[in-house]
Image 1 (cartoon, rainbow, N blue to C red):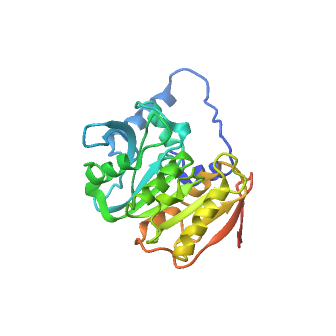
Image 2 (cartoon, helix red, strand yellow):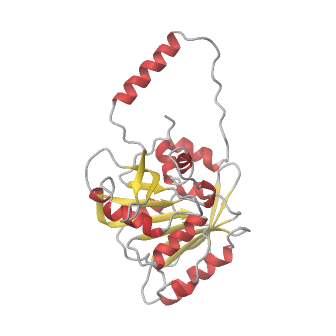
Image 3 (cartoon, rainbow, N blue to C red):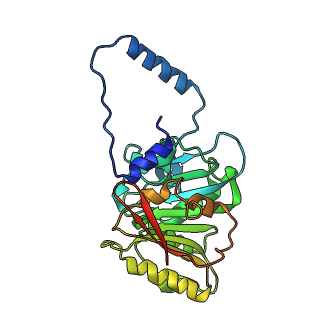
Length: 284
């Protein structure tokens, strides 16, 4: 299993590693590989687990994945909403949930003290009420939730679902990545929201101006309640910010694992992510 930190570096560099497989027949090497596999699979698995979730009270089901820490206990929860490019309706298609977002880092070896889950739908991105039903009822999720801290996060179409969850006044923190927009009139401005938005300033799919206007609106009614990270780029780069190693000054997971009070001040930064994986941070 690759170190998740190496995986994060590869994601930032947009580099796909091609590993050479030595040629030859079955021999001692193959025997050792089989032996290692037997030993590994004989151990308790604390990686991502495939599951058909019950997502409504009337019995709708959706394939997805979840992760729980090895040590029993109560933990913050991370709910991930996929984008429109990861749609599907069976266990095989659901594997696309392991390519992006926090579950990609779980697959690469990251083992946080968090409960993480994601489900897949056949169009756009999961409706927030499906994920909320799972949070409140699923035997693999609810008993292990600390009951307070939950991070709703997603990319593109999934970012829009995050904003819908916020408009529905779901508890917790909200981290949309390059979100498609919602009607601002749906948002109750009589209360603050703990939100950290990420958006590329050259996004030609989900306009960057939407995130700017949203954060300005939220901060105009409750100064400091919303945070925007702007990066120089288009409709991409979210894996940089899903990387547990990314901190500004904390990771999105630390942001979502604290109490539900809003940030102490408005933070607007520009992060330039270069092709070699390096970044430049500028406070505005």
